[in-house]
Image (cartoon, rainbow, N blue to C red):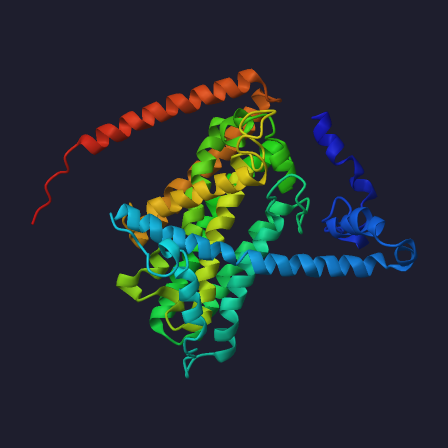
Length: 423
């Protein structure tokens, strides 16, 4: 109770004129561009030039150069992932996939991109032209803005190394819903509008269990900074937050399944169900504007997988303390691509859910379980104030026992013959 009173001890000095929301310093340390100017660039310049070189101008130039590299490199990810998915789909269907363009078909997605560049750009004559033109750029920009706060490796500069990094990611990704609704409304097509409303309902619904799952990580680490979250998992695989408590283990799977629903992937691709509503909210788009939606979807796949790796699978930290196994930037990319492959695996294995099943899964199961995880994580933190061999050992034992029980129950349920349905 004394700690509780101490929290409010300074309220008497609160100045109403400052408001309830004081200025928040989003950068806890010196800007990375300023560090680069002062520690790398300035010592290499001649003394006469360095004495009169404005640090502010150099900071702006470095940021522009980094932004140019970022815009040039990051869009290459979807090209690689599209080709990878076509090869994965072919493997699942016992065929070879694209093989004609380039060696082993590696230039097929590049050829498709060139075709889309020269394809006719059609705008519905009765639609809202301004919103129709803005929608793909809003989705594209928000999808790639998320990468600014993802730490890819130790020592690699992060453009948005905020002390509220995960909050920034959640806020930016939420704006994508506006672009989806704009695309469906401005097309002046009932199919596009229906697809956009489905997508908006799905994204808004699954953001709740996804955010609640992230909250369990924030409770354990005590920080919203992505770099702090990774640093708390530096003692090997058993210090990764997925194994730290049984509740974060469940939270990881809720996060991952909710992320699949967020990016409209099978079995949650109802907004783009081709057999029902043609192609969803982007039905009326063609050419490069359609390609922007396509690129944003695969960029979102990589982004949510990278966030999952950062939050639950150790980020750039290795699997063994003192050894660089699955560590550094290569290890981070490998773990991220493993989750991307799992998304592709699920797409070519599971059938599409009905819309009522989609919403039931979120509101009746995921959200209650996510609240249970938050409560359990708080209780676990009270019992084990600090991580130890005992706490992690008990956590792994509970996880192992739970997996055996779940496997046994699932096997018995699947072994039962379904009851005959009346004709």
